[in-house]
Image (cartoon, rainbow, N blue to C red; front, side):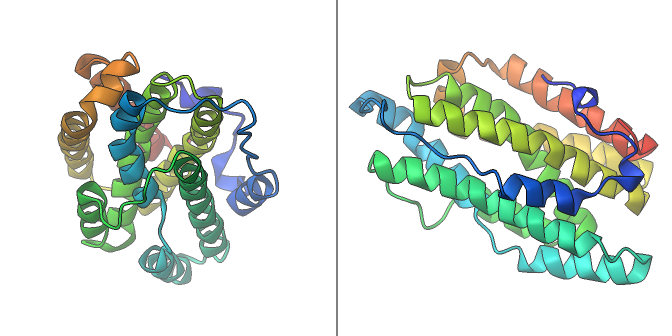
Length: 243
């Protein structure tokens, strides 16, 4: 587990998230396949289902999320927030594009639907911006462990570079979303619901992607420790407004 406090971000109340995401957009990962080995049938079988699911989950136009962001901005005099959210969605789309490029190279077909993605999208739309953020940040915390496991699964330089980029991007995402929850002033009961959601979600992800986690050195105990550790950091940020 990586400590969010090690990130170079201070005074989050003044942090320019739009500029942060725009800068990232100007320095996108260039995936190098020149030394990429061919995946064995066993390796492809191991990683394909989970990569297909995450690639689908990272791809979204974010129209409802942007609608909620604009409504929040109008009510709270935060004109910079929709712009930051627009850049955040673009960064998520880049993640999907990285995975899709890897999949194309290794002839792994895209999946038109993903059960996990369908469930996440349904939950995100149940309560406006608050629900969107809670579900998003839960998925992103689990993704940190998934990409670390995935990078260790197969000897693919391209996949390892993609996973490093994902980790680099997702950590600030957790700070961004957690600080939004701080500004939304959630009820303490909501934090209990966040714990229950995390426990349920990480269990479903483990059951559907256990082979990848095990191959990447993750037991269920390690996955739970990481995910709940990130969640506690997120909840602390949500309460205090600082890292």
